[in-house]
Image (cartoon, rainbow, N blue to C red):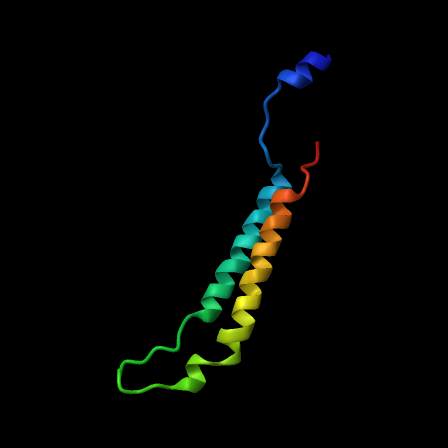
Length: 81
């Protein structure tokens, strides 16, 4: 009976880990979407209020960092047997 458990090969992650990884990836993508924008069609115009907005320089990087921390948690979480 013990011999079967030693020879059985399974996945490194469980279903819950993959779901958490997908959620973390979605949070990271959301952070990068929040960073996007601020461009202009006229190269002579510089709109600093749009480029240096709180959303782009504070909120978006914090969301991306939270997504990466969540990814580390999803990888380190032990799968249920």
